[in-house]
Length: 365
Image 1: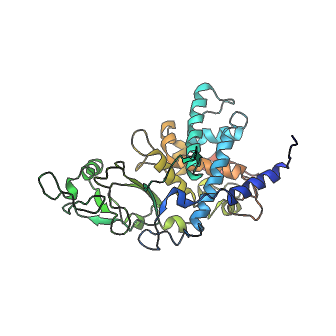
Image 2: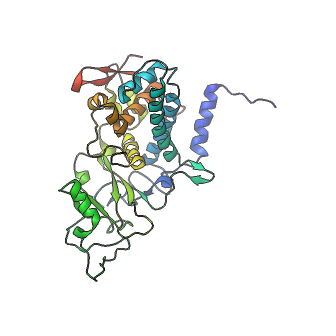
Image 3: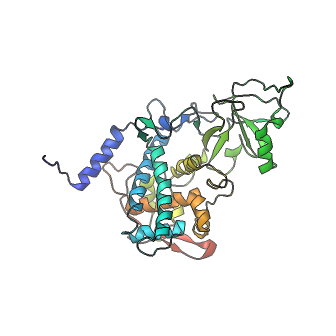
């Protein structure tokens, strides 16, 4: 059989072209995106019909970055720069070729990125998606769709009907188990109803709900509980992106971040805006609790991420974000047309400073 040969650069370009034109990947496959330009709607950032806009660009950027990271981590034994990056963000000592215990840790980290890649790629096995969208995953672009409810308000079920107990009495929100559990975790937790402005008739129990995006937060992952829902007892995972995640001073994409870097630039200053969506997706994929990712006590500051204990690093989403950003600036490539995923100058980074003053500074190429 004759072999069809292409130069490596051409193959890369072809793969990129095929990815963008044939795969048909869409954010609509991953989330039920709230429509409208108010009440949590994302129309300002995503045209659902055309499958275009800022959020679509973020989706593409995330898939490119995850693909690169998974492939580069596989070169751990051969690439000292990859080994150094994993030592910085995950505490895996750089001793050259990985020992058996280190290999287990490396494979766990690769597995995390592979799961995220499978999610954003909407990977299918045997025609069935690995992460199907069964009405259980929503994306909102503000928190103001959540309406505060007093505890003595009648509780409503997933059909927006009042809940009646065995004696025929109306159950109040304060009497439902979810409220008591949330109060046990945080005495300031309150009930927030999502059914007035969205198709989801459920409660989110938290100290902050509809007013979360009035603060400094960029986004959060909220589990909305539909009471008495027989087929979905685990709740609905909802990512809420605040307006500030689109307007903060971080680069709009990797290309723009790359253009800002000079020797000494802190990696934390050039993390692209799309990282917020990836960060929250890691929460969705891993959950919370003792075996899940940190939530509430998670770490964002780059010095704190570097200085954290190894066990904390593995459960902290931002450590994964910093590693993705580091490796993409280090190994990303220029692309025809200079899209947002294009890297025109490669930068490595190294720890500078001590203790709480540490940064990850760019090295002269």
